[in-house]
Image (cartoon, rainbow, N blue to C red; front, top):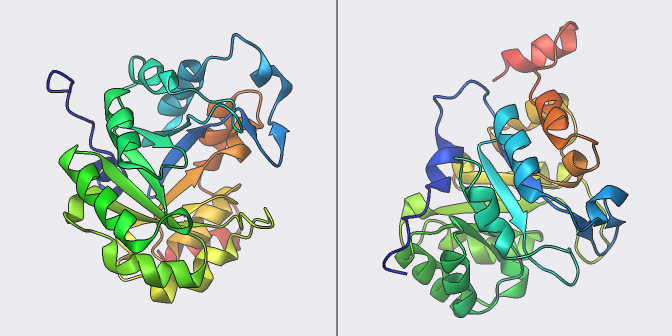
Length: 257
């Protein structure tokens, strides 16, 4: 571990404001899900290339890559992280159900720059311990919540133990029913102390969705299935990052930023 390269700074990559597009996208490499099965049939082939998709994302303007590593339910693999990092210059998030500190060491050894912590899967003591260890390993954490109760529980821990290592995610997908509603982020906004570190996850499909979130000071999103359903995920990301225009409604929305 001492000889490993230092992680790329995912926190800085998604919170910086000197880039061309006002929304930062963490673009996800995701072959399969428990609810949807194979997202596209060609992703089921043995020659699936996460690095090629990541290259498309980087070329289309992604600020970071999210990579599913769970094998059983998402057909991912831990090796995907390094394969992606060998081909792109942007940071890579290990997206998995991490419930034990050794998984953070595993993620760091595999080349991850950031990790996902899901509040619904962790108690307060586990969240604190994982945040401390992640910071010691120089990993950015994305602390994800869905319910209001878990947001209230997780909120005091965002930015602990070091502010520039921690992001807060609101998952618009209800994992109990698998329904997705972009309005979920907006309903919880008043409970978020610092919207500059807030990531809206799932349910983002159009440039107008990005504008709507920006109108509420939400400028970081994580997008997966919508992009992976496209034949060329990079083209789907490029279309998502195209500012809506031509109509008075789009102009009025942008004017509010």
